[in-house]
Length: 139
Image 1 (tube, helix red, strand yellow):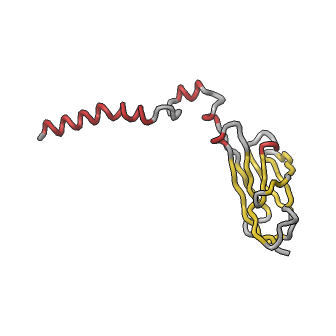
Image 2 (image 1 turned 45 degrees about the horizontal axis):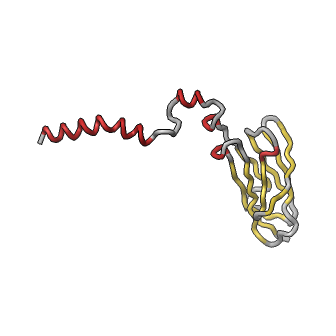
Image 3 (image 1 turned 60 degrees about the horizontal axis):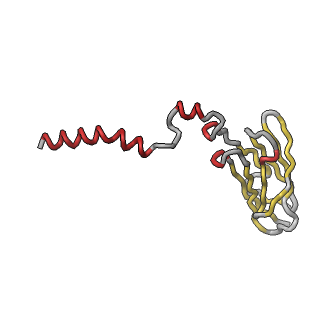
């Protein structure tokens, strides 16, 4: 019984690193491989979307103004905004260290709830950021 247990343990110990290497292959866990791919997806710094105004679940009038800030972007063209799946134009201004974005709710949204969705596009898909908040629109 002892020999069988020792055999089992030795097989597990020998094969575990091989199995782990196969399972993690290509995930970028190797520091040298990541350094060799400098400028690639491992260098991602996600944008942060903050300071939503008016506040989440606030009641506003149709066509009301809204604003938010974004940190860690290169230009205003990276930001896209929709309200109830309708694209909304926003204007961005750099105020060191962030961009301040301002827009208006569509006038046709009346007596409803609407989510303002903000998407920050990035060079790499896994670096994109998105966030948003919900407002109540009433007359």
